[in-house]
Each structure stands twice: as C-alpha cells, then as structure tokens.
Length: 201
Picture: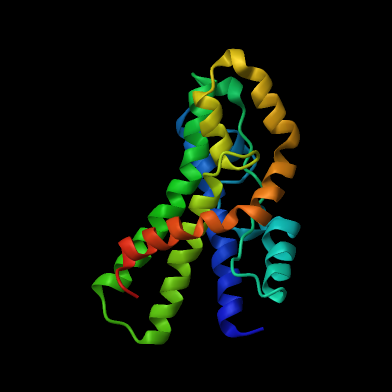
C-alpha cells in the first residue's frame, strides 16, 4: 500500500469522525446532550471508529482499485425528545455533518488556491478537499441511513408517514443499488465543487 493510499485512509477516518462530532455538537446546541454524555464530542478516534465502515470497507475499496473511497464512523446518537421541534431538529442535526465536511474542503481548498506549495504537498491537500466533498455530497443523498433522508423527511408531510416507513425499511437495499448504479451521477457535482474551491488543478 502506497503512502498516498495510507494518507487517504487517514483523511477518511478523521473526516467521518469530524462529520459525526458535528452531528453531536448541533444536537447539543438544540438541547440534547446525549452525545456529550456518551463521550462522543471528542477527537479521540477510538470513540468514533466503526470496524466495518472506518477500516474494513475502505480497505476493500482500496484493494479493488475503486475510483472512490467512502466509509463511515459510528453514528452519534441523539434523543428527539429533547428537541423543541423533533422534525426540524433532526434535519439540522443531519445537515451539520455534510456542512462540516464542506467547511474542511473549503479551508484546505483555499490553501491550495492562495498559497504556493510543492506539488507533493499540494496533492495531499487536494486529497483532503476531494474526500470531504465526496463525504458531504454522498451523505446528502436522500436515502436512509444517509443524512439526506432526514432532510427529505422534513419536507414530507406527516400524513405520508408510510413513505418514510418504506424508505427506512428498504433503505440499505436502495443505498446499495445507488452505490452500484447511481454513484457516478455524483462525480460531476463533486468535480464542479472541487474546481470552484480549488480552481484549475
């Protein structure tokens, strides 16, 4: 395994970790301290690493020469009973994760755009930008258990609860089908945002 691939795995682990911390921090701001009590608002990777999503799946994708590297950390729990508006609160908590990744991508992208680094270091920065854009856009797909599903539920009228039940029940299957057949539709969006932030690279 090359140094670049190892760096990609490290970036992925810490990016999904920050993603989950953002969920918990937003929940805390909205009145739910569940994540805080469980010690999940920490930068300690051991509190967030999911053996399958953070290690096994990314390694499999690496060895399969996958064109993308994706994964997840242990989801940060929240209790909707502590939210003033459970539906809107859930949407804000969900949105916090992708926003954290977009912020990371923007910060490191601006470093590339505004500074002159050796090409080797610039490539490492580009990996950080692309990985975080990938996580942000992928998680906004409205399929459970991704964050986009919580945003979708916010706009679905309560009377259509059966649709939500259907999505939750078959979400993993829909997500698998999307990864296999629909993931390439995200690549132009990610590439556009990458160019927008970093410039010609």
